[in-house]
Image 1 (cartoon, rainbow, N blue to C red):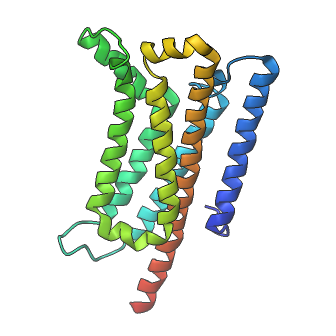
Image 2 (spheres, rainbow, N blue to C red; image 1 turned 120 degrees about the vertical axis):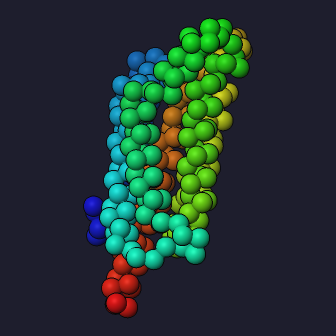
Image 3 (cartoon, helix red, strand yellow; image 1 turned 30 degrees about the horizontal axis):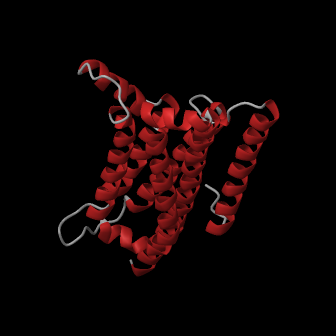
Length: 233
């Protein structure tokens, strides 16, 4: 998987692809004088781009798992490090499926229906809360296997940027959710809400790019570690 690419070159290429795709849909929205969010919503070009990026992240984690599967040692506490990469692989596959068919939003609607909850500005953010829970679970698993993950600290700079961008996306998602917020934005223009929601999606797809860089760097480190183990054996 692009083994000849440096992490920086891969990052630059992925950022360029995202920038061109985003610029194209924004230009189209401006040209047609339409709200831009339709080009970021479910089934759109950017939505599919996001899903593909998440699958790429899953694929990279699977390759790391395959490299670490032969590792004999475990941590002092008996933790099997391979589970971390298995979890991340299937976690990002789930996130890709969620991105494409909006599982969290459907779950939000199901919760409203099953408990007969009236939609308000607060309850309309349930789907955002579900996304936050996804992230917290992922971070807790990484923390649990921190001894393994720390070996990949060279990738932490990319990971930090990904987290910052993801937090910006989630914050904007909360800001634009709910009837009260929508009414507030309608006083200026509904178009403003459209742009805010689009910017939220832009933060998200760029966060995914930095996650690709993070785990691609981890993959390169895993290959290096395997060579070191091979020499020692």
